[in-house]
Length: 116
Length: 114
Image 1 (spheres, rainbow over the protein chains, first blue to last red):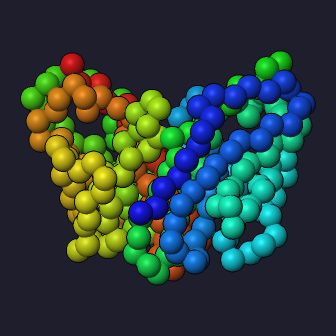
Image 2: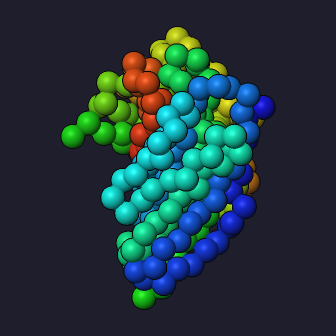
């Protein structure tokens, strides 16, 4: 079975500070992909960042970066210089390669509030 | 822009009514998905379709049915709506030709069953 766990239902951070959201997962697959999606109050699901499991280098996208620890099955999201627009629900997701025909798995989400 | 659209965006209905939620995409993706989002539970997969002739049940398919009318259209039906089906419903697409299997989401449909 494949599972994704986000153990922090709610978090807050001061504007301009750094925050880290945690995600752990379980899979028996050797190749897979990990994603962080953001859901602002508009409710649209927006891809923030993605990581390929066979790449050791951590992915970065501007102020967003991940700490991918494959052996520990951990995939945390770091947001630097937090902005008010970062206030949203964040979901971690585990996906198989496209050619396996398996489904996507989402965590239960972390609600992040950026405080002015 | 290539997009994923859902209709309606909001719907209030009564217990026992049949309701259909529609999803269309112009991304040219072959795979489509229906998810349900409840507070504290994240996104749960209802049904998914890897092509027009391939439809699969997800984690919570009971009480729901789907139809893949064309590669670009995937509808979700509630045959007899009940109050605990009140939720936010998302359609998503992905492209099997890409390595990442990234999913692209529609704007969601807020469904309330009274």
